[in-house]
Image 1 (cartoon, rainbow, N blue to C red):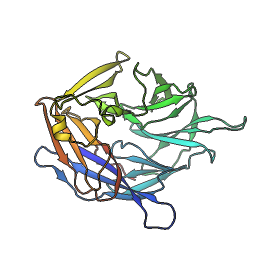
Image 2 (image 1 turned 45 degrees about the vertical axis):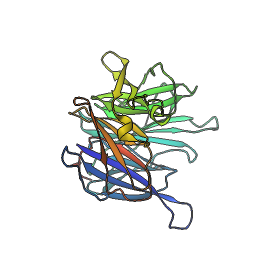
Image 3 (image 1 turned 60 degrees about the vertical axis):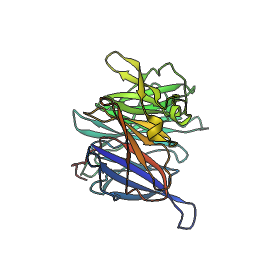
Image 4 (image 1 turned 30 degrees about the vertical axis):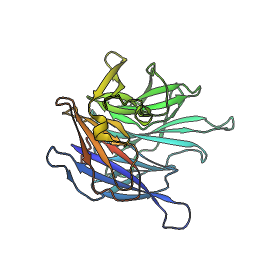
Length: 326
């Protein structure tokens, strides 16, 4: 299993406003020992207020800075620049990377929203670009239709050629959006009947898309008197077209976690072991908790080589090195 860490830290040594430096760091996880490269695989300076980094798919990531877009292979440190997104200068731009496993095609989905616009301008716009890796861009952004206008609010998660992400409708109701990468069609999935917070995240749980509420951990409501934790996640059953509520109980949580706040990042493929990562970093200290659902053992793993000055860390499980050319 390969853990992929996107590490963001502030750079204040240059004149003007601080910029963010993003480091992509690989950690190979084995039972004994834990192997880490101890080095950054790729270093990028970005304006954090206008930039976005997609979830990795097949070892590839999509970088966006306002309307500038590029596909990147962190392992080879190579980039492929894509055509600029066609959007109004005042539009809010959101982008996602998707992959169709059947046709082996990458696509970038872009959703733009424009507030307080003139009647002649579109408030919501949906565009798609097909990516030919290793080749000069032969296609341009194509406008597609969506019957449910929405503003994306979460990271995207692509599984089986379907891209999932959280959004809000024009009436501010929470939505789970489902985008078919091949057909380029949107579907709205009914949100589970639960308390709505701003901390819902999408993870893979035993091979299925699931929703987990990070605020359960941040508010401390999961702590049991004996030091165990109990929390719930909502798992999507695409066959039954319904959400299933799963109760998870983990012993000895307080003993291993201490006062550090961790959030659930999903299960590892093949082993179905649960991984929890720190929500905040503390100087250069960063660790994960690794729970074996069979042995009922919880162990803490220290991740080394991330460096100091960390502002935030994103942890993605089961990353693979890419063989795609750029």
